[in-house]
Amino acid sequence: MKLNEVLPVVISIMVIVLVAILEKHSKLVAAITATMPLTIPLALWIVYSSSQGDRQAVESFTRSMMTGIIPTVAFAVAIWFGARAGLKLLPMIVLGYTVWAAVLALMLSVRHWLG
Image 1 (cartoon, helix red, strand yellow):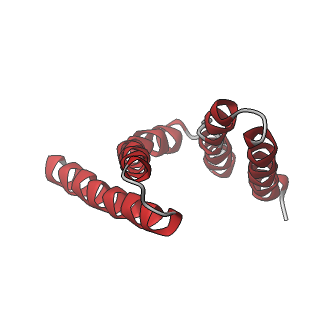
Image 2 (cartoon, helix red, strand yellow; image 1 turned 60 degrees about the vertical axis):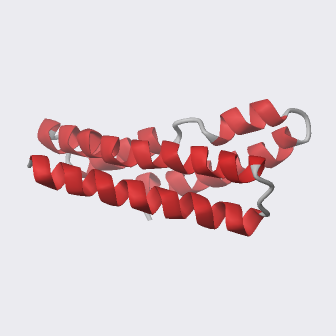
């Protein structure tokens, strides 16, 4: 396996462990760590490397990320509302992914409609 294939997995595991450790000391720091843009640079590195730095491929990839960011924010808002409503973990996650999927479908249809 190549470094650019293994490194994202290793970093992701390290972040999960770090969040578990930080959560005991500060919920805020753990939450900020959990939402840091870590996978974006890693994915960008993979796309950049696999395309040999092709500007068009990198630009297309970064533009496409915008389609995923809004549904992810909607996921976070939905689970926040679910937590405030007293939902247990599994229903909260189901709610988040349901909202995420609906907003993603909307974003994809708008993107398709705009061409």
